[in-house]
Image (cartoon, rainbow, N blue to C red; front, side, top):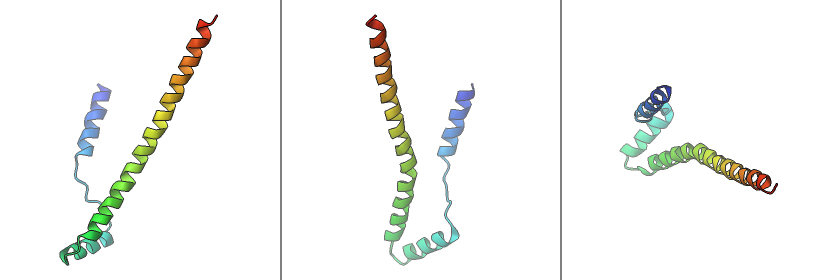
Length: 84
């Protein structure tokens, strides 16, 4: 029950729209976009996505190496006990 609650809360929070920009960034992007220069806004959005992906990528790499190490450790333990 607890896992279902946490999962549903995570899904709810992940689907909310976020408009969290500082006032200076927001006004600069709106000004540039209204003047016909959407390139800066696209660059800012790409930078935000880059910063968002990096922690997840780091966790996935650490998880992969952890999985690989535990799988190799299990093979060593199993082969060591069968040799007796």
